Structure formats: structure tokens, C-alpha cells
Amino acid sequence: FGLVLPPPMACASQLPRAGSPYGELLTWAMGDSSERHDVEDEAGRRGLSAGGAMDQIEDEMEALALSSSVARKAAAAERQAKQATLLSTAIEQAFPVPAPRSVSGGRAQITDAYGRRACAKVEHVIIGGEGVTLAFVAVPASNTASSAAAKETERRLAHAILVWCSKHVARLVVAGAEEDGSGKSLRRAGRSFFKEAQATALRDHPKLAKCAAACTLVLCAVNHSRGEVTTCHLGTCVAVLASRTAFGQRASPPTLLSRNHRVQDCAAERARVEKSGGCLAHTASQDGQPRGPLLIWPGGHETARCIGSLGTGRSGLLLPTPSCSTVPLPAGQCDLLLASASVLDEIDVSAAFALIRRAPCAQSAAQLLIEAVAVQRRSYLQGDQSGRLQPRRLSACAVLRVGASHAAGRSRAPLKPSALHGKSRWDRTTDATPQDSAFSSGAATPSVSPPP
Image 1: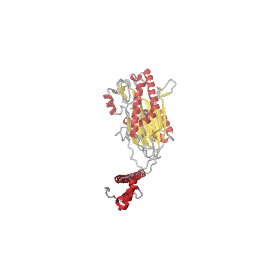
Image 2: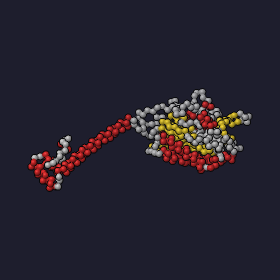
Image 3: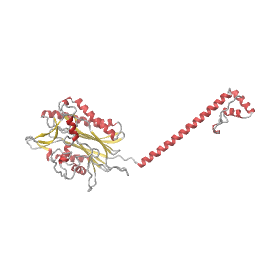
Image 4: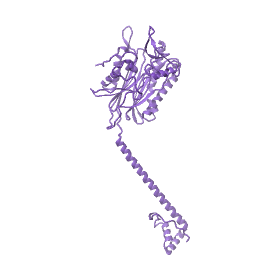
């Protein structure tokens, strides 16, 4: 009949069904002559030609082959998904996610004899579904060469900068992190906050171009889930981390999280200031002898790393870019101290953490530390004729008390002092002198006995 048959089929399961019209046509093509005549009559009655019937048979066979290929791909995808699920389960069992660390905070500050105020703040936020505690301490930068009238203007401008930073620090850090609580993201958010603070200060206070009003600050972000602390720091404020030990056990050495930006103690900062056109010198006594720490002139500033203006007219002298770092928290309980330089200039760092460990909570620890700083004799100036003493320098601190990690079997490398910054002059030895300390202002540090 002029019918061209397709090549032999691979398996009987791919043949057209017997009850279908294509199955009848196939029977007609392969069967005896009587059956072919019957099927031919039936095909003619249905209006189907032999060639058209075979085309439909080939189409059905292609559809069957395509469905078989889709089924094989679906089975392979299912196997891959099952393997990925098993692998994920094995990883979670081998490396369990640690429970979030508990963090409590406290803050305290005192004003100085000139009415200047510091700022200390502790706030809990959520970044990318992870709990983060932000601790922030900022103080006005010291300036020894201004007149009484200029000091009042500088005090108001510095206070305005502190208020703005305190009000917007949490919002800007959360926005800058972009729903990512990692250390890299928090460091980027910290730099963005410092940059925005400097731009806003210059835009909102045009008087900064002619007077010296600036503040130094330190910002720490403790991620509860990841068990790490990110520090962004400018100027003389410090951040120190120390592990809590049981009674009678020897305490591990504290870890300095911030760099010292004083020109008295930082060779790199001295080189940068001199390259930018600043002059470094000590103040002179009545007999012409140098005294006190090394300062930046004009202005008599301890540091050029701050937010605001130094009033020198040299735009490159002030650098508002912070130093940033991220370190893991110790596995056990630990305390994090953020403080103005005046706190650790008055009290040795080991004595400060001894006071913090004795306090029942973080808020009590901050208040106890500030009270211990205030009772130091060097902290006061003789007041009016009534004999009342006034604080020489303002002081502020924030204390974070971090609970122990609850991840069983999870090991951490021991935290080394100044691991990020190399060898530090801040590390104390048994025969250290006050000049060997990065927290020292050049004067002898008296011994401190904790209050009863």
C-alpha cells in the first residue's frame, strides 16, 4: 500500500496502545490481508490516510521519549536534593550553632570644672535577625590654648556634636549594616557613621571653620549569636576586653581593642601630623622647661583623630577615619569596658577590672568605676572660697557584661592581647613605669585601693 514503516522500537512498552486508533492502524500494517482491509475501511471512514496515521504514531513515540527524559531528570534532581539535605544535617550536627550570648550594659559619667559633658550610651538592636548590643562613649577633645570666651563657644559646639552622635548612632549603624551582622559589615557601618557625623558637623555648624571644637569617641558592637565584638575608634577613648575568672584564680591579661591615637604615644600619628603641616611640642613651664605630654600646635591638642575641627586652618591635619577591628569573644564570661582616657589615666587597668568584677551588675560596675576615678586627688581643682573641689577632667564609661557561651564542644583559640595591632606599649610588665603605658598622660599614677 505504499506504507513506510518506522524503525524497530526499542521496547514493547513504547508501542501504541492496542485500543487506540493508531494501534489498529499498526495491526493493519503488520497483520493479515483481511484485517488490513477492515482497518483500511475504518481508517477511510475516519478520514485518515496511511501516511497521516504513521505521522501521528511517530509523534506519540516522541512524546513518550520526552516524558521519559523528563522523568529521569526529575529523579536526578530529587536525589541531589536528598544528598544536600543529608549533608546539611551532618554539618549542623558536627558544628552546632551556638546559643546567643547574654549581654547587659551600664553607663556613667561626670562633668568637669568647665561644664563640659561626656556621653555614654548602651543600646540593643537587631541586625539581620541577630541581636547586637551597641556601646558608645564620646568626650570633647582637650584644647589648652583657647581663651575663656572661645572655650564657651567650643564647649557648645562640642556638646552639639556629642548629642547628634548619641541620637543617631544606632539608626545609622543598623542602616549601614544592610541586614548583615558580620564583623565586616559592622566595620563598614561604623566607618559610614563616622563619615556622616563629620559631614553633618561641618554642614550644621559653620563656626567650626574658625574655632577648635571636636570630640573623640569609641563604638563597640557585640554580636550575641556570632560571639564577636567589633570596635570603631577615634582619638583618646579606649575599649578593653577582659575575661571573668572565678574567685582565687589568676585573671588573664586584658585585651586592648582600640589603638592609641595620642601623638605622645603613637609614632605613626606623629609622622602623619608632621607630614600634614602640624607642629609637635610640649608646653613650657615658667622657667622655660618643657612639661606635660606632647601636643599638636596650634591649639595644643592631644590628638588629631576626632570629629569636628581643630581650628588650625589645615584641612589635612584632622583625620575623622576610625581604626576598626573585630575579635572573637572568650568562651567564658567576660567584661567589656569603654572609657574616656581620663578613666585609665587615673586608675590602672587591672584595678579597673577588679572593681568591675566586684560589682553585682553592669550598671553598678560603671558607677563604681566612675566614683573610684572621682576620689583620686589629681582629678580635682581647688574651687571657690568655700573650698569645694571640682573635677579637673570629665570622665565617662560604659560596661558590657557578656555571659558564657553555651555551645558544647566548641573550641576557640585563646585571645591574645593586641593580636591585631602587633606589639603594644600598653602591655604592662612587673617593672613597668607610668611612661610605658599608652593610657598614661605623663604624670605618675597613684596606687588605688578599691573602696570597701
